[in-house]
Length: 461
Ligand code: ARG
Image (cartoon, rainbow, N blue to C red; front, side, top):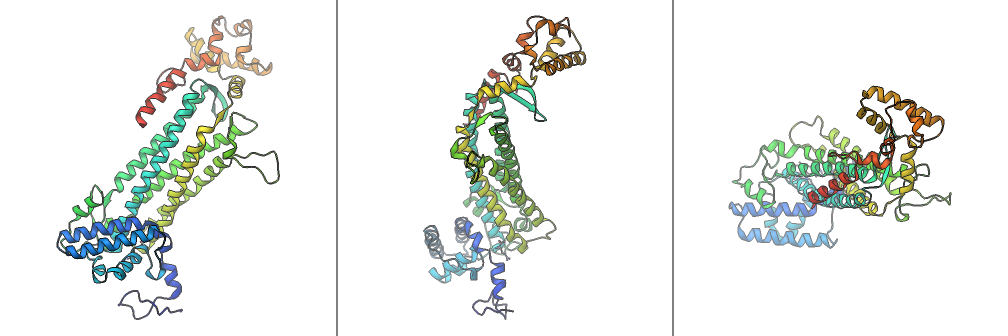
């Protein structure tokens, strides 16, 4: 055992902490990231203590001024963090006592690091979710603008990655927009639920001081004090909810990325990703790699990993607080960073995506994308859908054998499959006619897409 004689964890200990254990159990290297929230929480706690008569006004003034000084020092990067003080909470408290003496030692009255840390993480996540939502909105606006430009741009829609039916690029982009709307809702919802104050739960059982939990909650902008002291200090479900929402968002970005990567390939050649968002190869001079989408696709795995880490961290923990919970910080912080970075990269990149309209159009023409339209046409002429399906299948086979699209078959060839087919069938077989006919809510008709964009823009503003 390597005994460190510099510091005793508390007067209860006869022996100093083992030097490695001190390093092993310290969290200040990462939880100092919540320093601003920690100070905010301490000021609210002290203000409440003064209001209920536990601290004098003079003591409160000393505490508030001391904490303000510490905040400035941290902001300037001059604060000296020490792992001897284990975590962000004790570092700040020790420094406060250095600065103001005995009043500093009174700050922790009626409080524990257990309710303190639960408060800090909630404040921290509430702040970060606000930034994430702002970045998400920037991306959503970028998508709307691109969708507007391409409300009439025809491309193939896919199922099974096989050409299925013609759609507009604007419609495809609006699908991404919708997914992101739900992601924003999930994050806001999570933010609402985490916005309750654990302060006053103290270590686990509450405190014997005449505290006013409504006041400290109100001072911190929480909607109310939490209902149960044990629950307040132990559960991290709000962080799990946040990483779950983040994982779903990243899953969406990963699907978006996958499509951009495919579309930028020589085989699809539907889009151009500007040089600023790509890099070259160190060996192959011709390469232009879609790095940003690839990296975002890859980073989705890491966020889901954090979700799993937090679920496993929480699972089987007995009530109330356990030191296990110190492990919640790094997954939370990395989830926040990853999300903000990915959203930023996407919000910057999307406005510069260039659609290669002719290639999209050609691809839509190649895959018998209007076969369903022909079947629907025959149904309108009185055939049952299954019979129409059969007839169109035969026409497609002729197209495959003679390497022609349905619209390139002659009227007499088409009529050989069904006498119901007339000259006007070519309106139905055109890509423009096909998309225009899907004009119901949620359809791909250019006018419908424009209306959807307009509606979305109003809701977002
Ligand atoms: N650093 C700790 C954490 O992150 C703070 C709470 C410590 N509480 C305790 N009883 N050891 O959870």
